[in-house]
Image 1 (tube, rainbow, N blue to C red):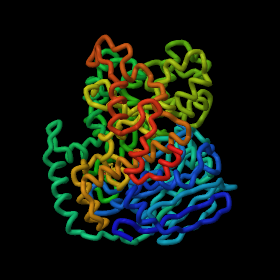
Image 2: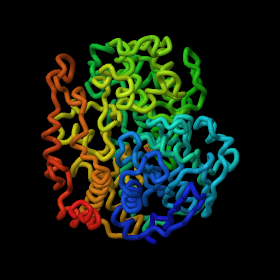
Image 3: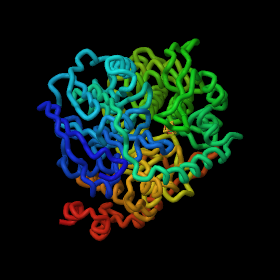
Image 4: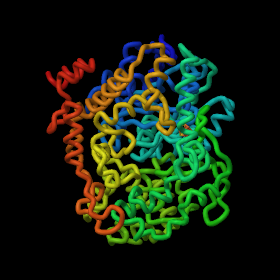
Length: 597
Ligand code: SF4
């Protein structure tokens, strides 16, 4: 096996309690690299279309890339994949922390689960062997408690990916958590794990990731770090900024620039939250207990918080909110109270809820409340008005517990709107069932695919995915196991070459990204999904445009963006089917056969 790969993956059938080890196919690694690339290849090949996302036939995978756990900055990343219960199509999520590298140190590149266990279990992967263990005593515990109990049992060198009560209760915005606050957040994959009665996966090991040419990593790594240390923003280098403020460095500026959506995507920051002082990065920084990093990452953008001492009594050691969390529970809920955002973040992390979806749902419920579609009776007396941070936190707690109205909201805005009726749908901001990341594409409407990427990625609602050729490199960064925050794009061919020993040119890297994009898209086509038919809420693109503020008069021309990208991809502009020639040129012969019988 080439460098970077441990060469083995595990397949666990939870219904029969059988565990099989398979040798990783070299050609698959070369073609699909790792992470969600290999994940998509395995699910497309081995899972049939139309399975129930919460049924035994859905496959849940946790999979690393060849660069995960290497000395390259940001090499902590790994992916979770499955058919998403939120969108009914391809689902993936990505996280840093320690779990990914330690899965490799335990001897495996990935693990895939099918079936449903008859009782709660966890999987222990311990230095080359794996066994299922009873998790009855962990069921019901939050993600922090679950990790703590398992790490006492298996020692500090063990790492845990687990679900909390949200995943157990099949909340469709449930996520998988590691390291007290790192989330495999998107696509509702916590519900898939919960449906399988799989509480956790524990990894422990001391194997090494083989690197073919260690010295060849040094130059690109030096250049990458030099860029991060010298590129200035807000008077600090990118590296210093990330250390001090994390991704939350942009919360304050974005609140008024038109970048962060306001009041459920319907408001204007400068008008609706004129005082944004509570969202300043120094306010969040004052809450920090200590900074920390994902595995061996010099960028170290994470931090834990001191115990909340005021109105919100979160425990010390909880995770500092990322930009997306601070934005969605901040101005998107017309809120400028940092402590309440810390609290809402902690509630979600402990319950195992995707904060992007959870915060969007709270803003959706707030808008229903102020428009009289929900009443005090529906909210159990919670006065869910814009900017009422106590109400926002109280409703987040209900969401986490699936209590009262929270039981309806826990399945996302699309399904909630269908259940609530009374024209609630007009306030449900989502694409394909998934709530959106917190960067308004209207601000970047001049960019070729800023709005299209939200609609057309196989897992919709993401600003990080990219659509069309602009997204190819991102696919590889993600699949290889690197963090986009480290700005590694320029060095991907060199890193992959040094670690795996295969000759990689930038052209080949981009082709691999294109192959992954086509494969994820083909998964959706096989499920009967044409992403073009996913309705885009008019607020996302500015139809009609806002009349005041930085986005006044702006409508993102999403149709033109999609048209351009579909052409560049050689995908049909009506059916979105990739051409047969394109699929064959990428070596996706089986998909060409499926789509062009
Ligand atoms: S940049 Fe931040 S999120 Fe990315 S790997 Fe490093 S510490 Fe983790």
